[in-house]
Image (cartoon, rainbow, N blue to C red):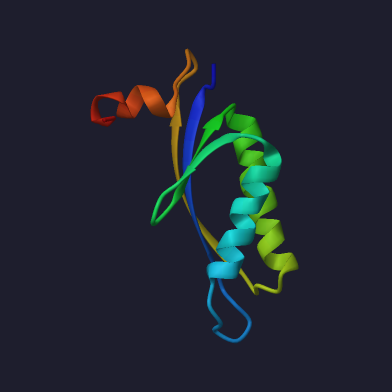
Length: 97
């Protein structure tokens, strides 16, 4: 079972103030390629997995933004680390329809 839930909002500084959505789409693609469980929400994306693996995904997301031409990147991150295991479903099951 996963031991961490990490939510990230990635905010790249674009070259000429252009739309950040293509950058965010690429950041989500990095998550998809990592093969971790995730959910996209309007203001952030939540990943489920092992702490070290998810932190590596975040590193790759930031590096990808720079590769795309961002001068810098702000990553707002929320971490729930629970060694005995945690899932997104456990936290939201009472709200599921």
